Image (cartoon, rainbow, N blue to C red):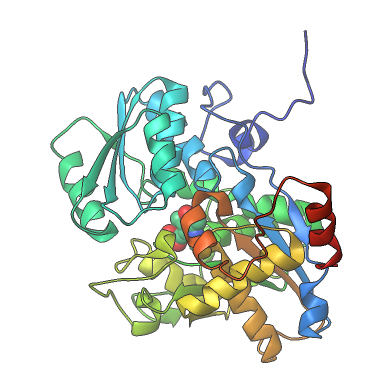
Length: 379
Ligand SMILES: *Cc1c(COP(=O)(O)O)cnc(C)c1O
């Protein structure tokens, strides 16, 4: 039987734009193709004439955008004969690596910072059958160890230093350009290791130039030389990266040693794609900014309460930063803005419940009267 219209994931969908052959076997969980949701209430609350969309990456199969990169990384690892993958992770990369390794029938080894990953992510690594190493150190320590051990053991690194990760992740921009019929004026996203902002830029550049290979020869800013070296393709968005104040190496001008934030997915002090991301922001005439943990949590709650979109804290940095910059006029009225909301709110129930102490939660007898009274007094 033919199922010609069944969506089978982004490697199949974008096979001609990715480094795979027509016969490469895709290791897929039907990732990608996530909703681009137009916000209805927040623009009105801001009192500004802007169109804001969220690209809801929490609806990927393991609940974050990491699936886009992982389908490519594991597809290529398997094609090249690898029997095991390894990553350091703040939680979502390990969840994705574990799931795609399960799908492929290979082993996943994951290094996570002990006590610093959200409960849902821990549950995922365990359920998908990864061999989990909790290290007494942070993500940056884990990343260093993974690089060292990959020289000495037969494992393929699937962190975003694996170039296939960014190849998969760039497809988010294709989907956005497809959905809007153009690129947005601004694209806002949280920045941790900075692979995703780099991948978004590759995707936009390729989608708008119809040249489906990262056109490094068209790159117009050279981070090392701090110089512009060419002309810009037209129509790309201004890229804006938001960090947590306690983990903001882009705002401090270089790596920091003890990153700390409630947004554990971006609790990173030494971003692996530092220079790439700096170049992205320069080329697009964008900027980096930072949010306090309180601002991040406020934005997370606001997106849930006013739009019905529950994202994890790191993801809320994009919308929190965008709201602040819209209010300040730094993002102009009349603009079309896309915020990537990177991960699902269900991943981190502890942080969510902790900040909802004022939520209405009644404890009543199982009687009609008490239920009715609860309704009438809360209308
Ligand atoms: C990985 C991750 C980020 C950060 O992405 P980078 O590519 O590391 O900058 C942000 N939010 C969530 C939910 C993530 O899992």
